[in-house]
Amino acid sequence: MEIKVMHQVMEWNEDVSAQVRRTLQEQHVCLVNVMGSPGAGKTTLLTALIEKLRPSFSIGVIEGDITGQIDAEKIAALRIPAVQLNTDGACHIEAMSIQHILPQFDLASLDVIFVENVGNLVCPAEFDIGEAFRLTILSVPEGDDKVAKYPLMFTDTDCLAVSKCDVAPYFDFDFDRVRDDYRGVNPQGPLFPVSARTGEGVDALAEHIAAAVRRALAGEQTTYRRD
Ligand SMILES: Nc1nc2c(ncn2[C@@H]2O[C@H](COP(=O)(O)OP(=O)(O)OP(=O)(O)O)[C@@H](O)[C@H]2O)c(=O)[nH]1
Ligand SMILES: [Mg+2]
Image 1 (cartoon, protein in one colour):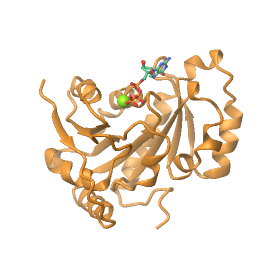
Image 2: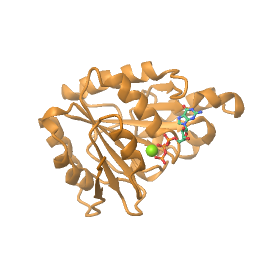
Image 3: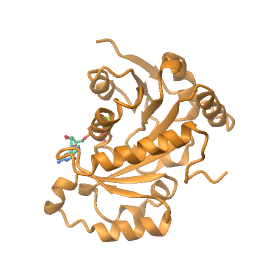
Image 4: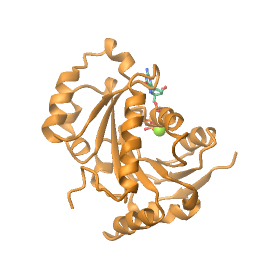
């Protein structure tokens, strides 16, 4: 199977994210920016979400990685249109790259494009890529202090999934601490404990995303954007 591999465009322009958002609104496509640390379980959870959401939505995926096409191959194996974006060393995706990639998709046939951002708990949160909705993923093995230590990733998001809950018994992970810290930086943001391994919480998260996609397609603004 041949995967289209595109490269990051680093030409910064503050208008581009607005242009991307406008283009996608006109085409009735909702862009979902999925962020989290390397190995947090982004691709695995995305795969589980796609299976839940594909009966209702036509889905495409942009896979952001420094190099390689491992994740795009996993998505393409699901028979979902996937484009691999290689950032060639950059630790986040920029809107200009999304603008560059969109013509690779048949936008008229899509409802949702998930963007799996580069694994990083810091930089991706700083860059508006023209998304309508942000999902942050924090996995149990990363530790329960991450909301306190990396607040922007949890402040500037619409939704937090705490992933790999099936391994919680093996880690000193205090869910109440995460919940309290998250509420402190993002009072409106919902939190979903999930496990892609057991399926725990995946239905609830998928339903929440489906509702958010429908609202975004209807032109409603989501919570994290305050402009
Ligand atoms: N136990 C358990 N392991 C999981 C779960 N989800 C993912 N994993 C494992 O965690 C590892 C990383 O998962 P990925 O989905 O590749 O993580 P990622 O965030 O996409 O990683 P990068 O794209 O490299 O940043 C893999 O070995 C997965 O099998 C889960 O719910 N439970
Ligand atoms: Mg991945």
